[in-house]
Image (tube, rainbow, N blue to C red; front, side):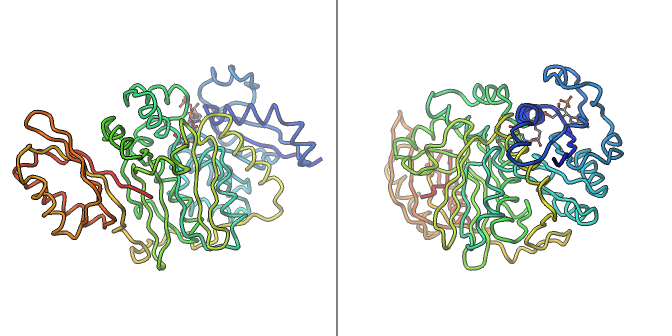
Length: 425
Ligand code: NDP
Ligand code: HSE
């Protein structure tokens, strides 16, 4: 029986889930995959977590040298989070010939090239299934199962925290802050939940996913990002009346040789398959030119779902005789803007507060017309001398909408432009 020593960096939510699966399923893994995975060392500061899991305290420390000096440790799985010391520790492990497995999308999306360069030198492997969409096997789908396709689009709900918040706000009418606290308690949210609610976590994941999908490095600075912290319950309610559900989407498209990558809240038709994805569940819709549509669905966060992806990578890594690296140029070179389309097109929902006087709609329509934006429908609700007006706009470019909004704000009967939300059909 092949015996492989494993080290775990961190014993928090993901590390804890991984520890539980590796210990509980050790015999099944031996029987089914012919490899005995032995946890030989753990780095963790907080001994209460070690105690809670019943792990052997003698193999716990905060010193990476305990892992580097053990030749039996072949695989190091990281779930510290953050950039440092995670990156430096993993680079040292790779140079020492130990393969790495990571759930840390923030670090991985920005230092993938550095890890890969160290991996090539150390003839080791770099595995990152858990970095995107928790327990959903999207990385392996992209790298091992789509070779017969050019991927045209990858679109998904890739953050559990924000999906939990938006679902609970829509279905239970709960306030944003209340639901965010629940998501933190459940272990879905990042240490700093700004990463979730402001769309950074989805942006890191989209950078990794779209680089794999389009065989081109898609750095985070090429991704448009907007989070959900400005979303109001009111817009979720109005959207429902129009037949839409609000989701934080990560979208990567390749059209006419140009890549478009964006993360933002979007209304989708309530009968769209992604609209049914609730709570901390995630889903990714991939369109290949030959296979057509593929939809992957499952838990995007949490200890055991993410631990499941980590253990899958550990088993996969332990069975490789030769590790594979990126299908694209993955180095420190600056990626030019040329291959990217930043002025993407969508339909839009626009909510304004206006003075309830004759001609106000005509003034707004004139501004929209100036930027060649066509109106699909208008609804208004009058309260006293004010009206809330909602325009649903036909497909137009982001730059046109931005210019039109600036022009509309100048109309003296417009009090405020309260919300602009993209609509994806
Ligand atoms: P946690 O904060 O729950 O766990 C991290 C653990 O690592 C903590 O116990 C922390 O101790 C410990 N740690 C951090 N740095 C060190 C260090 N230098 N030496 C020793 N111990 C250290 O985070 P999560 O498990 O939630 O997330 C970990 C990673 O996994 C992140 O990159 C996250 O983005 C990713 N991820 C998380 C998912 C989830 O559902 N939570 C899902 C998918 C990916 P202390 O708390 O004392 O600092
Ligand atoms: N904070 C992340 C989320 C964890 O909510 O999706 C999983 O990557």
